[in-house]
Length: 267
Image 1 (cartoon, helix red, strand yellow):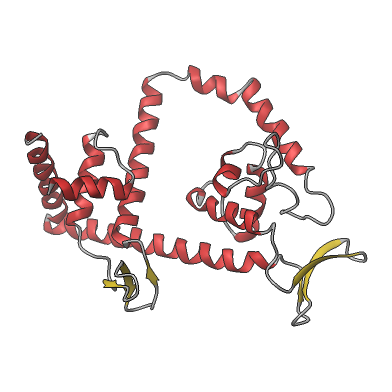
Image 2 (cartoon, rainbow, N blue to C red):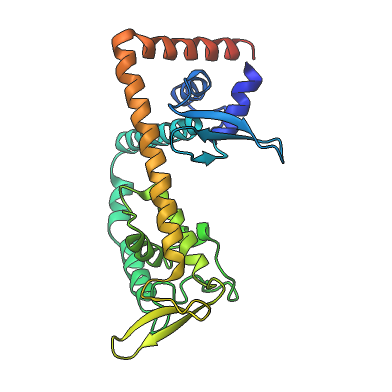
């Protein structure tokens, strides 16, 4: 069991030294029931495990239960961090809210907003880094950079991603922004002088559109990923409601804590 828990810690991005409450969720994820409709399969070519939803036909390399518990762990960490910050006083928060930090963010937003120019739209030149010899930033770097994050949020708005409520999906917008630097085969960008607006046309099919060709695929990916997250969250909530009635949640947590205590005692 210990090896299974350690492996699950790695799978969920959890350090074995984290709080007991986090580790309890790790053990719970090993004991939890599969999500409705999902079953584990093996890829015939690679032998790797994947999960298939017999109701929707969707498949994923990630265990949906793991994804649901990874989200619960992130929420728990956020609560723990907020509690620690509140206990430590508001001095640090006040320093961040005003002064040079806020000014730097505003300056970065203005700089990013003026960097695109005609012909680039939201994609523009935001994905090329400043001060890094013209190197193209990775999506994670764009998301972390105060210079480029406003451009990521511009793309997120087009994809329907809310930076606050859908913050975990902003990486999709960053990947879309990075992908926009290279058009799919056959596509070219042009500028409509009458409308004063960029558009894209395919010289193979003759198709033209106002939206960058990269948007559609990334929008669908966001919608599918969010739907899966909501499905997993709803299932966890249903499990919790049923558990409150039948005592299953208490049993599950108790089993997880007992397993964890046994592992810690054996260290």
